[in-house]
Image (cartoon, rainbow, N blue to C red; front, side, top):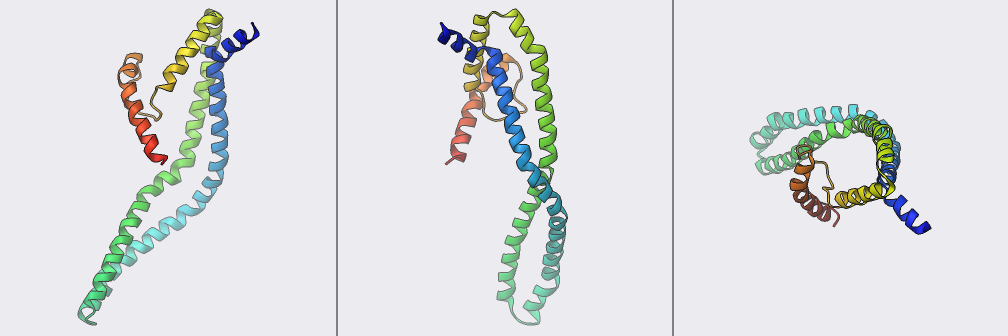
Length: 192
């Protein structure tokens, strides 16, 4: 009898959801601690990075306009000028790529803080409004069955956020398996 009660309590929908809410809070706290260190470094890096981008962009342009033509014409070093232009092109491509990545990197700590606030508020709202309804209006067997259904559905759900995917049960039932398959392939290729 005790094992049947334990089995029910582990799949009771409120218990399952509560464990996941608790785990989300733990992960957010761990992430917040790690990002706090990165955020401090990020604030320290923003100015020097911006200065570096400006320095290198203007430096490279100046060399291309003034120095390399002089290498070609006045010093008759066309081959050297071409080699340097190829190198500079590679550097410019990397700098452009870094510059595109930087705003996301620099904005991540604030975005994470906003995300954490929304996730915690949502979890607390469910805990206050939904959990008591589930506990009051469903008997333990119904909560267990709902919990098992939740666990089953969550196991087959997409493993990444898809902001344009449907939010209805019907839409998730139709498109969810397709997105889940794509996500599983994505996850497998990124973990190798």
